[in-house]
Length: 146
Image 1: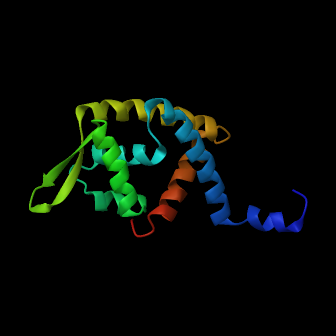
Image 2: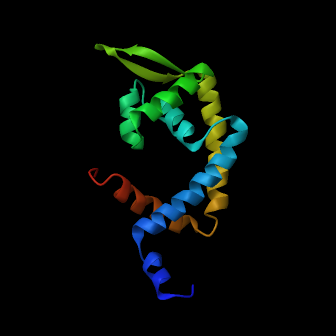
Image 3: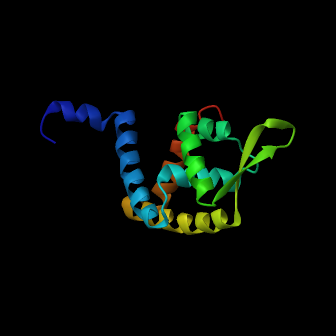
C-alpha cells in the first residue's frame, strides 16, 4: 500500500464500511440474480415478510432509499406476484406491502442464497468476529436504538 495517503483510508470508518458494503452487495446481487432479485428487492421482500403491514414509506425509511425507488421495486415485485398492496387498517390512504405465498417461498430461497454468498464474501471472519461485526454495525446503522 505504497503512499501515505492510502493509510488515511485504511483508518477511515466510512471508507471501510463503503468498501465492505460494496463487496457484500456485489456478492448478494450475484447470488440473487438466478432468482431474479437484487439486494434492494430482497431487502424490500424481507420487510414485507417480516413486518406485517409495512408501508412503502416505512420500507423507504428503513432502507434509507428514495420513496420513488421503493415504488419501482414494489411495482416489480407485485407484477411478478411476490407482494400485494393492501388497504391498511385504520387508514384507507395507506397501502400495506404484504408478501404473497409465492413471495414467501422466494424469500426462503433468497435467504439461503444470500447467507451462502455472505459466508463466501466475508470468509476471513471467524464466527466470533462475524458476531462482533454485526453488533458494531447495528450500533452504527441504528444509533437511536437500545
